[in-house]
Image 1 (cartoon, rainbow, N blue to C red):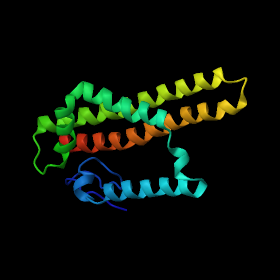
Image 2 (image 1 turned 180 degrees about the vertical axis):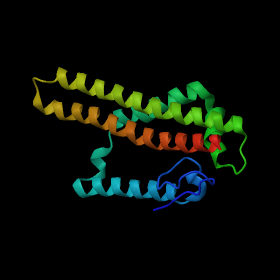
Image 3 (image 1 turned 90 degrees about the vertical axis):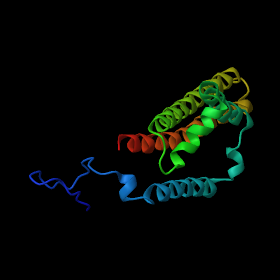
Length: 170
């Protein structure tokens, strides 16, 4: 177990105390976690079915399209591109980092919001088709896939927000 070095006089605790930056200590951990998580997700999908059934055009239009519209509407195209590229710089401007943190926080929230909006749309469509059982499945798929897409966008955005926020905190 890792024990951070604390100043003299403080007890040596076998827990994370916030006195070091995980990104500086473990630079490859985040990349490994993202690749590992994406691989596990893809394997889970492929072992259960075809990847094609996870593609739904109305859900794609709503969630990634709606998220993009909300974010670009808030930040503009130039501001969004700057927010994405700033964290990749070695010595970014602190104000630009704060801009990036706000961008990724809004992107994650917008993805979750549009995902939940899609869930409600799918449920309404499903309830309207209760008399024809063959139409319930596609409506339920819209409902579940929009939630899936929303989480698929929100989780990396919120991870980026967290990393940038820790970087800002120093």
